[in-house]
Length: 315
View: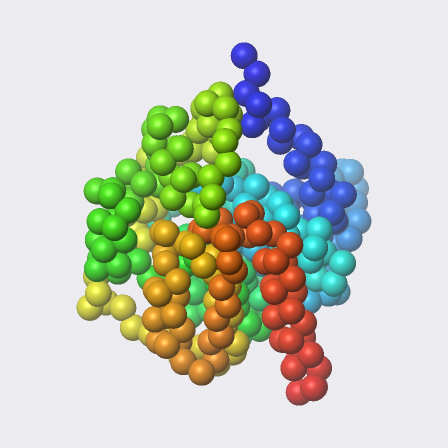
């Protein structure tokens, strides 16, 4: 029987190529490979074997789009690539154990994801970029910013937090009616997936049961490793410190986000200090970039343009 989600992948891949990005798999270290969607103009050269040679350094400002926990890179950011690729070099990774990325390293921490992303970007010739992190990807983006501040020009974060402390985890799960992050984010049935989808959006749309079943089969693989990723995310309150980030951080939120609500975003803005700004998008939940892509893209591009303009003035 045809899996309709799997069957749509070639179409989505074709649309991404038309938008200006193509897939490229890197060996980050022995046993760890990571799939990136990279600007096709950086892979024009061919080696003697006919395969793509080492990528060229991007000539436009770089934007790194980091996905969340329920889907791989281009599924999460499918509506942003075309909107950004004319003015920016857009890179979309699949985090480890999503899409085409995997590792035999036992480290499951967001910091390890961040280290692998940066190693991959350096291989791809990227030395400075703006990370845009959604949900779990936002936590990875904060780890990049903390460990590699010299590479970050600014940041955009949507539906995420600095760190998943035990108190935030407990209060969020209690409010949503779940006993664990695994129960919420690793559904095993159509019923559980529908519950997650209902929580993640402002206004649920109707989809046939078959589509939920197919999505569950395609997007929720590597369950053991992903459960370990969830365990590694949570940290004790006493172990959390707020780093000083010297550049602009824009919090771009769905006003009706139930997973990380807007009050949490406002509290995080206060913790981040004067370099942080915040915007909410009405009639949007946790999946803000998918629910209201035109509004999201407009505000994202406005922020990126302001960062680029300020850098030109400094130069």
